[in-house]
Structures are given as C-alpha cells and as structure tokens.
Amino acid sequence: MSQICCDADEPPCHCLATDLIDVLGRKYALDLVCVVAHHEPVRFGLLEEHLPDASTSTLSTRLDELETEGLLTRERYDEIPPRVEYELTDDGRELGERLRPVLDWIAERESNR
Amino acid sequence: MSQICCDADEPPCHCLATDLIDVLGRKYALDLVCVVAHHEPVRFGLLEEHLPDASTSTLSTRLDELETEGLLTRERYDEIPPRVEYELTDDGRELGERLRPVLDWIAERESNR
DNA sequence: CTGGATCCTTAAGGATACTG
DNA sequence: CAGTATCCTTAAGGATCCAG
Image (cartoon, rainbow over all chains, first blue to last red; front, side, top):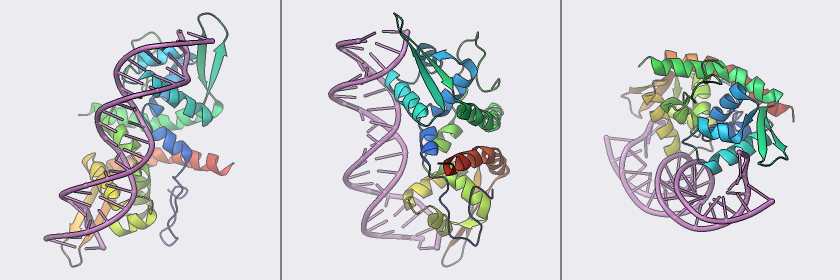
C-alpha cells in the first residue's frame, strides 16, 4: 500500500483525489471499459445492447469522459447511415488489465452467495 | 477479460451490476479501503483527518456500507470518551491487494502530467 | 470522541424528442 | 445510426446540531 497512502507518521495524503477515479466511479464507466475491451472495435448500438439499463445520454457522456481521460478513442466514419467505432487506447488496455483481477474477484465473490 | 464480459457471439452479459461495485463507486469508498488498509486499526477521527473533504455523515454512511459489504469491521470499546476502531476483513484485504496495481497505475499516470 | 438525525443543495442520471 | 438538447426526478452528499 506504500504508494497508495502515506506512512503512519506522515501527514495525511490525498493521493486518490484524481479526475480519473472520479470518472471511473460514475455509472457504467467500469462496464464500458470492460465491454469495449472485449468487443473492440465496437459501435455505439452494441454498447447500448450490452448496457440496456443505461440511457442513451448517460452512455454518451460517459464515453465522452472516458475519451477525455484518454482511455478510449472514437472513430467516426462518414457513411450513411453513420458509423462510429470505439476502441481502447494503450492506457485504456493497461487499465483494463489491471482492473481484471479486481473485477474477477468481485464476480467470483458474488457467485458464492 | 473472459470472466468479465460475454463472448462476441453471446447475448450481452451484465456481470458488473453488483452491490459491491455500486458501493465502491461512491465517494471516498476506495479511499477508505486504502486508508484503513494502511493504518488499521484506525479510529474514526484519523479517517477524518485523512479525508478532510468528506463530511462526517458521508464518512459514517460509507463505513456502514463497507461494513455491510463485509469489507471492514467496526470495533467499539466502551470507554469514555468512546473509542472505535476499524479494520479490514480478509475480504477487504484481498480487495485492497487487487486494487493496488490499479491505484498505483492511476497515481503514477497522474504524476506524469 | 463517535457518530445519528435533520434539512438542504446539487449534480448525476433517466425519458423523450429531434437531427445530421 | 449515433448521438445532442431539453427537461425532469432522484439520490448522493454537505452542513449543522445534538446525544451517548
């Protein structure tokens, strides 16, 4: 935990107050990282199918935020009808891999009930 | 990502919609897991010092939730003035360890700006 | 000291309609 | 198809005060 929090004799640190943590805490953010990781390149419509509880607008803003945070890219193809594809950036994949043990553990723990 | 999301040809999964993910997404939840992990057994007052932006009530409810989720324990000592100590459960420590690579990466990424 | 109770504010998210 | 714009609801969180 050394990098995560200060030592006992140090003044309190606030290392976790980052924009990224903030964004990842919002609804469907982790889900999006996960779904995109597994289906990239993935279109908006498929993301909606995977997250039917999320409203269009929420999904849209979350994707914006994740793009702003540099975790994924949005590629727009000028076709009719329009097509847009989302992919993870290298950072997004790195995060996804580090997230995996956490989410696996949570899923496994959930199934033991 | 196999455990986290369905295969491309399967119907969409919703494996991430768990109470735990929900709670961990709330404000200061990750911070608490981290601070408790590094300072346990830790008293309420010290948690407040570490998270000065969090209100007393938020901290309190978050601790309740984390206890309900089985991630930490609250030990009350009948003294005057009262003393309460928080510790992680085995599950809490397990989560903390799996969270570490994620948070380390975020912190490191943050510092490269 | 450790909160619980209360009240209040804000912002996150949902529903819907509309457009390039 | 892939959103954006708008409006609205709800719930999360903050501030404050009080109590064991």
